[in-house]
Amino acid sequence: MPFSPQVHDNPRPVNFSQTRVAVVGGGPAGLMAAIQSAGSGAGTLLLEKMPRCGLKLRLTGKGRCNLTNTAGIEDFLAHFGEQGPFLRNAFHRFFNDDLRKLLEDLRVQTVVERGGRVFPVDDSASSIADALIRHATQSGAVIACNIRVKRIRAVPDSGFFLDMEKPDGRLYSCRAEAVILATGGLSYPGTGSSGDGYGFAGSLGHSIVPLKPALVPLVTEGKRARRLQGLSLKNVKMTLRVGNRERTWLGEMLFTHFGLSGPIVLSASRYAVEGLDSGKTVTLSFDLKPALDDRKLDARILRELSGHGRQQWKNLLKKLIPLRLVPLCCEETHIDETKPCHQVTAEDRKALRHWLKHFSFQIVGHRGWDEAIVTSGGVRLSEVTPNTLESKTSAGLYVAGELLDLQADTGGYNLQAAFSTGWLAGRAAAEKTSGKTVDL
Image (cartoon, rainbow, N blue to C red; front, side, top):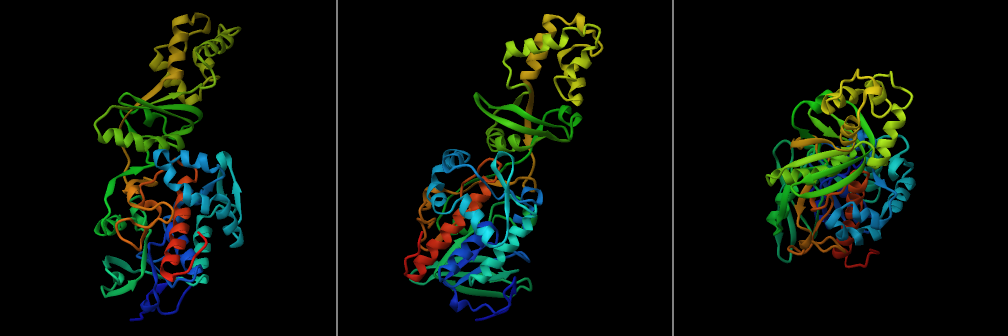
């Protein structure tokens, strides 16, 4: 039965009888899936429970939207770790250059910044979301907002029935030949990410890899990090130790009132969270001078000492580390900050070198879902066909975006995965429902 829900840029009533593909979720994966499905000729209905689409997308990159990265496919896949190969097919069909070209056609210009990160020129994540919404409706998709999907039922030889609820409590149902799940994960729950999709997938036969916050700030023991709140360190080497295993990153980090954040800390967080959950000891150690080995670092310190014998130790340290680190360094190396440089001993230099190369923190916890950028875990990849994203347990069901058990480092990798999987799922669902071959 037709009804008139709140829709964005599409005021016409929704006729459920015309729906071939139902897309559940209006984030980056869902919008891209709706664009491709409708553009391929399939009657497409996108259902979004929030008042408008793309709420979480509008927050990404602190509102700037780091939408992708210029890295090549192999480098891209490496940032997803062991799960990376699953995305190879999706990336070969729709990748970073394709995304930038699509946005350019939609009159959204992009720019490349440090580390290959790609942002819209206007620094507005909303410009990305709004452009995709307009493109979806212009492609023929119907976007119905404020519609909460309550249940999805697979009926043999009849496709799927979706039971839905409007804000006033009225219930509706519609049938679709194919369903694309793109509801997102659990991060940023204020944008509507409540994990509904995991329940839908589970009810349709999928197993869910345990869910944990990822790309999330970490909580440290004691008050050392609080003393340095707001200080950012660049070009440092960070080593994460979980039990007996080590991983390293090079880049930028940030001290907060509760612990540690910044790009390399966020990238390490999924492994730290896993370690904490399994009861292992987790530490982060920072090499503040990664370009210098012990011998070269000692030579650098000796050069600074030379000719400045009457200078106080703290003044020498200012040439090696940020000013705010100086008091903590003196305390932890047990060297008086007023000590004249001509009295500095070989043991003092050794203590400083060790501190500079092994500035360590014990990790005792992590922040919550409202601060996590993505979700670790999700629909098990072995239960999804990588060249179409169709479910192996329920024919006609497709899974895209953050619902999949895929997580990468910061830098635009996760959003590109959402766009690429949405693109592939939309094309594949259109082909399945239309009986026509779509260029995948």
